[in-house]
Image 1: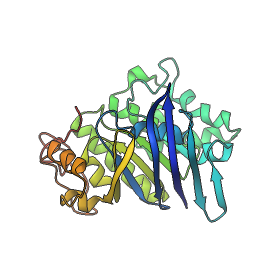
Image 2: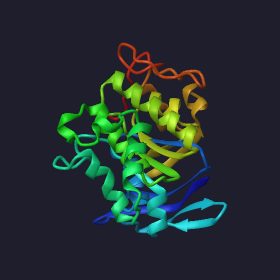
Image 3: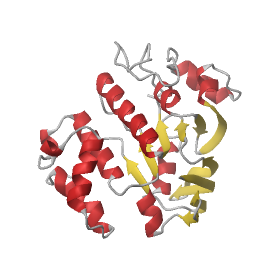
Length: 272
Protein backbone atom coordinates (compact mmCIF):
# COMPACT_ATOMS: atom_id res chain seq x y z
CA UNK A 1 0.00 0.00 0.00
CA UNK A 2 1.11 3.52 -0.80
CA UNK A 3 0.43 6.86 0.86
CA UNK A 4 0.72 10.40 -0.46
CA UNK A 5 2.81 13.24 0.96
CA UNK A 6 2.54 16.89 -0.10
CA UNK A 7 4.85 19.48 1.47
CA UNK A 8 4.80 23.24 0.92
CA UNK A 9 2.93 23.03 -2.38
CA UNK A 10 2.77 26.33 -4.26
CA UNK A 11 1.04 26.96 -7.58
CA UNK A 12 1.02 30.33 -9.37
CA UNK A 13 -0.81 31.65 -12.44
CA UNK A 14 0.78 34.79 -13.90
CA UNK A 15 1.77 36.03 -10.46
CA UNK A 16 -1.47 35.00 -8.76
CA UNK A 17 -0.86 32.47 -5.98
CA UNK A 18 -3.55 29.80 -6.32
CA UNK A 19 -2.03 27.40 -3.78
CA UNK A 20 0.19 28.80 -1.07
CA UNK A 21 2.36 26.41 0.95
CA UNK A 22 -0.15 23.60 1.41
CA UNK A 23 1.10 20.48 3.24
CA UNK A 24 -0.65 17.23 4.18
CA UNK A 25 -0.16 13.48 4.29
CA UNK A 26 -2.59 10.75 3.29
CA UNK A 27 -1.89 7.42 4.95
CA UNK A 28 -1.88 4.23 2.86
CA UNK A 29 -5.44 3.06 2.36
CA UNK A 30 -6.94 6.25 3.80
CA UNK A 31 -9.64 8.41 2.22
CA UNK A 32 -8.69 12.05 2.69
CA UNK A 33 -10.89 15.00 1.70
CA UNK A 34 -10.23 18.62 0.79
CA UNK A 35 -13.09 21.10 1.09
CA UNK A 36 -13.50 24.80 0.49
CA UNK A 37 -15.54 27.28 -1.47
CA UNK A 38 -15.10 27.87 -5.19
CA UNK A 39 -11.68 29.37 -5.85
CA UNK A 40 -10.10 28.05 -2.66
CA UNK A 41 -7.48 26.12 -4.64
CA UNK A 42 -8.64 22.60 -3.78
CA UNK A 43 -8.95 21.33 -7.37
CA UNK A 44 -5.65 23.01 -8.27
CA UNK A 45 -3.97 20.85 -5.61
CA UNK A 46 -5.19 17.69 -7.38
CA UNK A 47 -4.15 18.99 -10.80
CA UNK A 48 -0.68 19.80 -9.48
CA UNK A 49 -0.31 16.31 -7.99
CA UNK A 50 -1.15 14.61 -11.28
CA UNK A 51 1.01 16.98 -13.32
CA UNK A 52 -1.70 19.05 -15.01
CA UNK A 53 -0.51 22.22 -13.27
CA UNK A 54 3.08 23.34 -12.81
CA UNK A 55 4.33 23.61 -9.24
CA UNK A 56 6.15 26.79 -8.27
CA UNK A 57 7.40 25.20 -5.06
CA UNK A 58 7.11 22.28 -2.68
CA UNK A 59 7.38 18.54 -3.08
CA UNK A 60 4.94 15.74 -3.94
CA UNK A 61 5.74 12.08 -3.39
CA UNK A 62 4.38 8.62 -2.74
CA UNK A 63 5.59 6.69 0.28
CA UNK A 64 5.41 2.91 0.56
CA UNK A 65 7.36 -0.15 1.57
CA UNK A 66 9.54 0.04 -1.52
CA UNK A 67 10.61 3.64 -0.85
CA UNK A 68 9.48 7.02 -2.17
CA UNK A 69 8.35 7.99 -5.67
CA UNK A 70 8.59 11.65 -6.64
CA UNK A 71 5.96 13.32 -8.78
CA UNK A 72 6.67 13.45 -12.50
CA UNK A 73 8.19 10.01 -12.92
CA UNK A 74 6.48 7.40 -15.08
CA UNK A 75 6.03 5.11 -12.08
CA UNK A 76 4.36 7.95 -10.16
CA UNK A 77 1.98 8.66 -13.05
CA UNK A 78 1.01 5.01 -13.20
CA UNK A 79 0.42 4.78 -9.45
CA UNK A 80 -1.64 8.00 -9.26
CA UNK A 81 -4.75 8.30 -11.41
CA UNK A 82 -7.52 10.90 -11.47
CA UNK A 83 -11.29 10.86 -11.90
CA UNK A 84 -12.51 14.23 -13.15
CA UNK A 85 -15.61 16.18 -12.23
CA UNK A 86 -17.52 16.18 -15.50
CA UNK A 87 -18.12 12.78 -17.12
CA UNK A 88 -19.43 14.53 -20.23
CA UNK A 89 -16.17 16.40 -20.81
CA UNK A 90 -13.59 13.86 -19.62
CA UNK A 91 -14.32 11.17 -22.25
CA UNK A 92 -13.42 11.65 -25.93
CA UNK A 93 -16.74 11.80 -27.80
CA UNK A 94 -15.38 10.07 -30.93
CA UNK A 95 -13.76 7.15 -29.17
CA UNK A 96 -15.47 3.97 -28.07
CA UNK A 97 -15.23 2.85 -24.46
CA UNK A 98 -12.82 0.17 -25.65
CA UNK A 99 -10.44 2.73 -27.13
CA UNK A 100 -10.78 5.06 -24.13
CA UNK A 101 -9.70 2.23 -21.82
CA UNK A 102 -6.99 0.97 -24.17
CA UNK A 103 -5.22 4.34 -24.41
CA UNK A 104 -3.57 4.43 -20.96
CA UNK A 105 -2.44 0.82 -21.44
CA UNK A 106 -0.76 1.77 -24.72
CA UNK A 107 0.90 4.82 -23.16
CA UNK A 108 2.42 2.69 -20.39
CA UNK A 109 3.32 -0.22 -22.69
CA UNK A 110 0.99 -2.76 -21.08
CA UNK A 111 0.17 -5.63 -23.39
CA UNK A 112 -2.74 -7.58 -21.87
CA UNK A 113 -5.31 -5.00 -22.94
CA UNK A 114 -8.13 -7.43 -23.72
CA UNK A 115 -8.20 -8.97 -20.26
CA UNK A 116 -7.70 -5.66 -18.44
CA UNK A 117 -10.50 -3.88 -20.32
CA UNK A 118 -13.03 -6.61 -19.63
CA UNK A 119 -11.98 -6.80 -15.97
CA UNK A 120 -12.13 -3.00 -15.52
CA UNK A 121 -15.66 -2.83 -16.95
CA UNK A 122 -16.81 -5.68 -14.72
CA UNK A 123 -15.35 -3.95 -11.65
CA UNK A 124 -17.42 -0.81 -12.23
CA UNK A 125 -20.62 -2.76 -12.93
CA UNK A 126 -20.89 -2.20 -16.67
CA UNK A 127 -19.75 -5.44 -18.32
CA UNK A 128 -18.53 -6.26 -21.80
CA UNK A 129 -21.78 -5.05 -23.42
CA UNK A 130 -20.61 -1.44 -22.98
CA UNK A 131 -17.20 -1.98 -24.52
CA UNK A 132 -17.93 -0.72 -28.03
CA UNK A 133 -20.38 2.04 -27.18
CA UNK A 134 -19.63 5.73 -27.59
CA UNK A 135 -19.95 8.22 -24.72
CA UNK A 136 -23.11 9.78 -26.21
CA UNK A 137 -24.79 6.38 -25.89
CA UNK A 138 -24.23 6.35 -22.11
CA UNK A 139 -25.95 8.07 -19.22
CA UNK A 140 -24.02 10.42 -16.94
CA UNK A 141 -23.60 7.72 -14.30
CA UNK A 142 -22.41 5.19 -16.89
CA UNK A 143 -19.90 7.70 -18.25
CA UNK A 144 -18.51 8.29 -14.79
CA UNK A 145 -18.21 4.53 -14.29
CA UNK A 146 -16.17 4.41 -17.50
CA UNK A 147 -14.00 7.22 -16.12
CA UNK A 148 -13.46 5.22 -12.93
CA UNK A 149 -12.61 2.13 -15.01
CA UNK A 150 -10.07 4.16 -16.99
CA UNK A 151 -8.46 5.34 -13.74
CA UNK A 152 -8.32 1.79 -12.35
CA UNK A 153 -7.10 -0.01 -15.46
CA UNK A 154 -3.44 0.71 -14.69
CA UNK A 155 -3.94 -0.74 -11.19
CA UNK A 156 -2.91 2.44 -9.35
CA UNK A 157 -2.55 2.77 -5.59
CA UNK A 158 -3.84 6.34 -5.33
CA UNK A 159 -7.02 7.82 -6.83
CA UNK A 160 -7.52 11.58 -7.07
CA UNK A 161 -11.24 12.38 -7.11
CA UNK A 162 -12.16 15.88 -8.28
CA UNK A 163 -15.82 16.27 -7.26
CA UNK A 164 -16.61 13.00 -9.04
CA UNK A 165 -20.37 13.13 -8.43
CA UNK A 166 -21.22 16.83 -8.56
CA UNK A 167 -22.41 16.65 -12.19
CA UNK A 168 -24.76 13.73 -11.44
CA UNK A 169 -28.26 13.68 -10.00
CA UNK A 170 -28.77 12.57 -6.41
CA UNK A 171 -29.68 8.93 -7.02
CA UNK A 172 -26.72 8.40 -9.36
CA UNK A 173 -24.41 10.18 -6.91
CA UNK A 174 -25.25 7.55 -4.32
CA UNK A 175 -24.49 4.70 -6.74
CA UNK A 176 -21.12 6.13 -7.77
CA UNK A 177 -20.09 6.92 -4.19
CA UNK A 178 -20.98 3.42 -3.05
CA UNK A 179 -19.00 2.01 -5.98
CA UNK A 180 -15.94 4.10 -5.08
CA UNK A 181 -16.08 3.06 -1.43
CA UNK A 182 -16.45 -0.62 -2.36
CA UNK A 183 -13.48 -0.39 -4.75
CA UNK A 184 -11.33 1.35 -2.13
CA UNK A 185 -11.92 -1.40 0.39
CA UNK A 186 -11.53 -4.22 -2.13
CA UNK A 187 -8.32 -2.87 -3.63
CA UNK A 188 -6.97 -1.09 -0.52
CA UNK A 189 -6.71 2.15 -2.46
CA UNK A 190 -5.68 5.54 -1.13
CA UNK A 191 -8.18 8.31 -1.95
CA UNK A 192 -7.68 12.06 -2.13
CA UNK A 193 -11.06 13.65 -2.78
CA UNK A 194 -12.02 17.25 -3.44
CA UNK A 195 -15.61 18.35 -2.95
CA UNK A 196 -17.79 21.33 -2.08
CA UNK A 197 -20.29 18.93 -0.49
CA UNK A 198 -19.62 18.24 3.18
CA UNK A 199 -22.09 15.34 3.26
CA UNK A 200 -20.17 13.52 0.53
CA UNK A 201 -16.79 14.18 2.13
CA UNK A 202 -17.83 13.14 5.62
CA UNK A 203 -19.36 9.94 4.28
CA UNK A 204 -16.40 8.84 2.17
CA UNK A 205 -13.37 10.34 3.96
CA UNK A 206 -11.80 9.81 7.36
CA UNK A 207 -9.99 13.15 7.55
CA UNK A 208 -10.61 16.53 5.97
CA UNK A 209 -8.42 19.51 5.08
CA UNK A 210 -10.16 22.89 4.82
CA UNK A 211 -8.78 25.40 2.31
CA UNK A 212 -9.40 29.11 1.96
CA UNK A 213 -7.81 31.38 -0.66
CA UNK A 214 -5.12 28.86 -1.50
CA UNK A 215 -4.12 28.08 2.07
CA UNK A 216 -4.87 25.22 4.45
CA UNK A 217 -6.70 26.67 7.44
CA UNK A 218 -7.73 23.58 9.39
CA UNK A 219 -7.42 19.80 9.42
CA UNK A 220 -9.87 17.61 11.32
CA UNK A 221 -11.43 14.17 11.37
CA UNK A 222 -14.64 13.88 9.38
CA UNK A 223 -16.63 12.90 12.48
CA UNK A 224 -15.46 16.15 14.09
CA UNK A 225 -16.65 18.05 11.04
CA UNK A 226 -20.02 16.28 11.14
CA UNK A 227 -20.30 17.04 14.86
CA UNK A 228 -19.48 20.72 14.16
CA UNK A 229 -16.36 20.69 16.30
CA UNK A 230 -14.41 22.99 14.02
CA UNK A 231 -12.06 25.62 15.45
CA UNK A 232 -11.49 27.99 12.53
CA UNK A 233 -14.20 30.57 11.79
CA UNK A 234 -14.04 29.84 8.05
CA UNK A 235 -14.77 26.14 8.63
CA UNK A 236 -17.74 27.08 10.79
CA UNK A 237 -19.01 29.29 7.95
CA UNK A 238 -18.77 26.36 5.55
CA UNK A 239 -20.77 24.22 7.95
CA UNK A 240 -23.45 26.90 8.23
CA UNK A 241 -23.60 27.14 4.43
CA UNK A 242 -24.22 23.41 4.21
CA UNK A 243 -26.57 23.15 7.19
CA UNK A 244 -28.61 19.99 7.15
CA UNK A 245 -26.04 17.38 6.18
CA UNK A 246 -25.97 14.23 8.28
CA UNK A 247 -23.13 11.72 8.37
CA UNK A 248 -24.35 8.12 7.94
CA UNK A 249 -23.17 5.53 10.43
CA UNK A 250 -19.87 3.88 9.55
CA UNK A 251 -20.34 1.05 7.02
CA UNK A 252 -23.88 2.26 6.24
CA UNK A 253 -24.29 2.55 2.45
CA UNK A 254 -25.68 5.62 0.78
CA UNK A 255 -29.27 5.50 -0.47
CA UNK A 256 -31.08 8.01 -2.61
CA UNK A 257 -33.51 10.24 -0.72
CA UNK A 258 -35.52 13.27 -1.64
CA UNK A 259 -33.23 16.25 -1.81
CA UNK A 260 -29.96 14.30 -1.69
CA UNK A 261 -28.08 11.02 -1.65
CA UNK A 262 -28.41 8.55 1.19
CA UNK A 263 -27.81 9.94 4.63
CA UNK A 264 -28.39 13.45 3.33
CA UNK A 265 -31.43 15.27 4.69
CA UNK A 266 -30.55 18.10 2.31
CA UNK A 267 -28.11 18.35 -0.56
CA UNK A 268 -25.32 20.44 0.93
CA UNK A 269 -23.64 23.10 -1.16
CA UNK A 270 -20.69 25.38 -0.46
CA UNK A 271 -19.62 28.41 -2.36
CA UNK A 272 -22.39 28.26 -4.98
